[in-house]
Image (cartoon, rainbow, N blue to C red):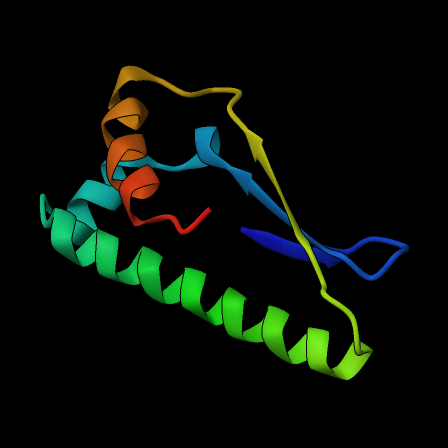
Length: 90
């Protein structure tokens, strides 16, 4: 995940889902889907806190644009998408 900002001050979030190394992910996380959901939830919450703080600082509502690069996705990746969508607040 990469974060950046647009000219208007909005937050840009880029995720290259096809770049996820599924073997490495399974080796480090096993099949613990609950743990992955928890970590994803924490990342979402950190982003939300940052957006709220930026909005207060800018005295306007700061928006987030999520860009997902799906190039390179495989059926192994597809199994991961479900839990990520469930945990996502967007």
